[in-house]
Length: 392
Ligand SMILES: Cc1ncc(COP(=O)(O)O)c(C=O)c1O
Image (cartoon, rainbow, N blue to C red):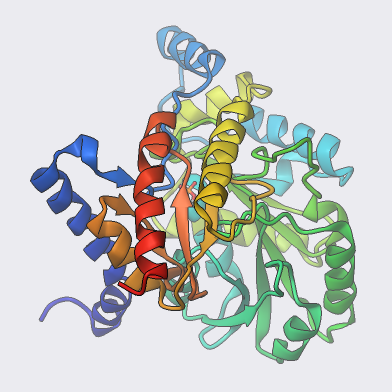
């Protein structure tokens, strides 16, 4: 077998995603696309904002010399300056263009950062539930994921985190607003984390994964992690904010308060290159530089969140509304989330089991579906709950 043993192992581990995907295709072919309610994928179904597309068309038409070639590996200066300016305003931390590396999406930023900081066997703490690919990203660079449970509200359990720190700990991954739990970390919990990281006897960085930062509901406030955590690497993208997931445009920002920030910045420019990304997609770097204040219409997600949460609560589910991002992490009425996903599937509803994110007893529902999919799916959720209660 030519496929590496490590990858064969990882494929087995990741096979539930593939199984669900295949089952979805099978069900759609069998029962008709309109009878299947697919809540599995976090792929924004809204078009990018009109101003973003207008900038893209203008720049493509303009075709300025050098628009499509290599540029300094860290990215076009104009793009990095625009990001740094925005981060200075948002975080009050003195980010400069030198702190910024344009990347191939958020996943590219995270791999670039992990490759720069991990030696084989180094540990990365990950609060659970979490985006499943973190484990693979860490393993890509010889690291070991150290999962740590969050509290009942899915917020950081500082005592638990402290107990996981060892001489091999290099980083903790934070993701607020969180996929899948929808929680936004509070200022006080972040301050507690900062004091734990500052008291450690070696440098531990927080890698703040922020693709959902602009998707915050009910007039809530996103607490800027880089404002509070000194050793902070921001990884993010325009995948969710502008619905550009397929264009692969993001950035890594290294807080100047991080020890050895300049050396780390050099290292990341190098790792971005040797991972084969070389640089982020050129035209999209230019778009982000020239259309910097375009944002997504959050009311679309907020409306769908309310429709889904209120609908599920009326059916009798135990629902907690997400504070941000575009997922609902729903407590299952039976302990086995895989079994519950199976029951939903029989009714044409596709969802992701919580165990895939490291927390059983929940399912994740993505709100990146048309409004009417939510409306039409609610009777199916109700039928399944009735069946469960009737012990069927
Ligand atoms: C928490 C989280 N981090 C990172 C990513 C990857 O983002 P990108 O597509 O920009 O690489 C995702 C995508 O779903 C995500 O949910």
